[in-house]
Image 1 (tube, helix red, strand yellow):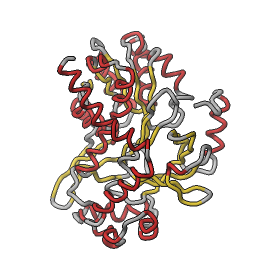
Image 2: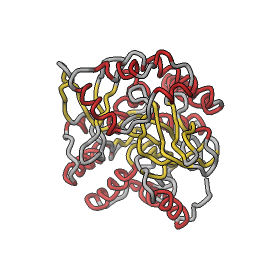
Image 3: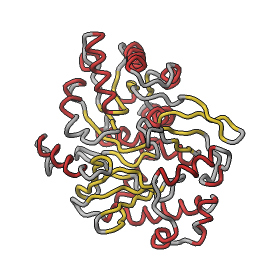
Amino acid sequence: MSDQTSLAVGTLEGLINPWYESIENPKKAQSVVLQRLLIDYAKTKYGQDHAAENIDNLHEYRKKFPIATYDDYHPLIQRVMAGEEDLLLCEPPIGWAITRGTTQGVSKFIPMTPTDLRMRVSAGRAMLNYVAKSGKYDLFEGVNLNLNFPSKVGEIKVGDNELEYGYSSGIYTRYVSHMTPIRSLPDQDEIDALGGGKSTRDWNQRFELAYQRCKNQNVTLVGGVCPTSINFAQYLRQVHKCYPKDIWKPQIMTLGSVPGINTRYQPALQALYGNVTIREIYGATEGMFGQQMDEKRAWTPNYDLFLFEVSTSNGIKLLHELKPGESGGLIVSTPVLPRYRIGDQIIAIQPPYFRCIGRERWWTGLSYFWGELTTLNLGRL
């Protein structure tokens, strides 16, 4: 076994074993996570106002801490930006993640702490788990085609300090690349240097950079935002008269940001990139919450990292308590945001598999079932 492979095996075990252990006993894992979070919340003014230090069970946690949306947290986040860091944070922030979408026309800003950032490395679990299960360690001999958003868009003043802010997909890639044994090209610094614009011209610059840096490389992994990977393939066809499958033979694509990656998007992805394995990741600006662990086309939660609740028609439940077919609005507790209603609608498939079917809207369930029916995927896992 080579040194690189030995390093890879150690990295695999360290990142995926806690995930698998939590899947085996989600009730225990969620209890441990709650206690860990409460210790950190007790160090913040918000946590102290809600008596975090006196809470020792889920019932009390729900009683003391209200469910809150970004709109509820926004005034508190503004106070953190003004320098009142310990209002929400148990340790100083090291950066900020911003959303690609908007809330009432304004990008959401989410502070990142060292603890929070370490948890974001779980973005690599889908790829590492694929390698562990398939034994295809030669994936690490290639490169990751990096089509992500910039990890640095600008700086904001937080109290007396200037801190960087950027898009979560770029931030994930920057730190996952440092913690996993595969190199990303273009380097995230190269992407950041092109600026944070979102116009067609800005993306064409990023796509051309990716093509030039990777055209002579062994691309074994494509990770990032699903629609961006399709847009890149369309760019190659328009500008260079080829498709990704004509240049590279990637083993796996780990993609997120939209529902239906394994159903509605799969035919287009495999037509553009070849007969590649597709693994869905489920995350947001606030954290990386789950990833697909096998051929079954749904993701499995990171029960060892976050506390997951769901607002259902039958009340608030823990995520793992949902019955197959039951759905509701996801509520996550992160190191920064207790009981945060993220705005996504989740459906339970069968333990331990779930899907995000869209934003919380009255028509989301209807749209999901119609999409599954028209693509002949209804009832298929």
